[in-house]
Amino acid sequence: MKEFDFKKSLGQNFLKDSNIINKIIESIDIDKDTLVIEIGPGSGVLSKKIVPLSGYSLLYEIDSRLKEVLYSELSENNNYKIIFNDFLLQDIKADLQNYNYKKVYVVANLPYYITTPIITKLIKEVFPDKILVMVQDEVASRLSAKEGSKKYGMISVLIGSKYDVKKLFKVSRNCFIPVPYVDSAVISLVKNKKNKIKTDSIFEKLIKDAFKYKRKNLKNNLKSYDLAKIDKILSNYNYSLNNRAEDIPVCVYIDIANNLF
Ligand code: SAM
Image: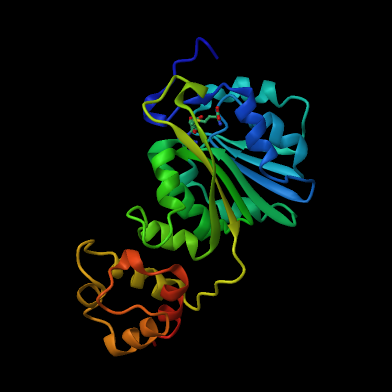
């Protein structure tokens, strides 16, 4: 890939460190019952390890200049499809209907400029059993943050309500070509069976409103809600309306959302 004209605008920082590539693959138990989705296969460094392990793999790559290298890297396999399109525009539910599988995993070194929209789309439209992705280190910290941390925000709660999120390991910027400005990290999201949200739209609106103004407490951010009811639930967990959104654990938000109406 030496002569390849990497496009910064597409987040094209390709992994070149074989130890990290192996470490990523070893962090997830892909088997023949697994359908794997990879977003942004690039030159196929991860894909050529993923595809032979999987039952079937769906690879979404926006840059059709990578066609030749990808088909050549995967030439020994027939259990995959590459879709050359913007993943964010793809009707992924329709794609999945064509296959039989017991579980869906996502493995990807994500293009950094659309990390959150990709993860949000995956959770809303696919709800994969596991997601193992490389993201910028700072983003990894935000996605895996727990209550009480400054990095804990709406996205940590949204993801934490459906997945157990762990930052697995950091990856130095020197493991990529071209070298990006920041380090990365690999995070794993495993579907969480404990948390049961009754209505997603109510839960999502609640956390959006709770985190609306970072400096305000819950009493101010949730003015338009039944505050007496919320206060009662909060007090069961030793919190109050004077707390800020960042103090409240995911399970408490779920309890509030499930009992609002
Ligand atoms: N998987 C390869 C690796 O680890 O070396 C490449 C990872 S690189 C960080 C991100 C990849 O995502 C690039 O191949 C880029 O072309 C692709 N990409 C960027 N935006 C995309 C989009 N909207 N849909 C699908 N692929 C995209």
